[in-house]
Length: 97
Image 1 (tube, rainbow, N blue to C red):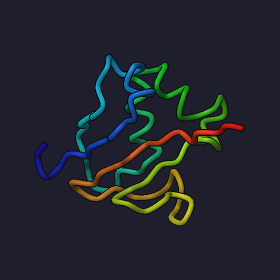
Image 2: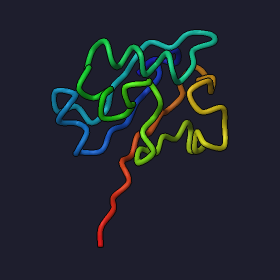
Image 3: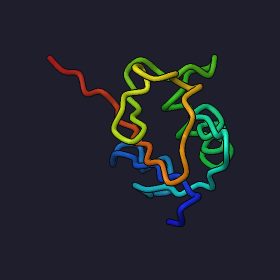
């Protein structure tokens, strides 16, 4: 990964929708938002995007996303700005009973 790239970490359950990759590296840029990053992921891996976002483009409520360790719910959600070299972690909530 170069300094200007963004690293996206996926759990095993989502890696299957990204050709088995647990880590994606995408080009970063000034002003890159989480939403535009998810758009880029969707162009490459449409099934993965559908697992992360619903039909309205909103992050599904059972999906947790962290930017450099901070939950996007405490930031600007999809409008959160990614810095050069940011790490985005996508996790699916596990429910059971």
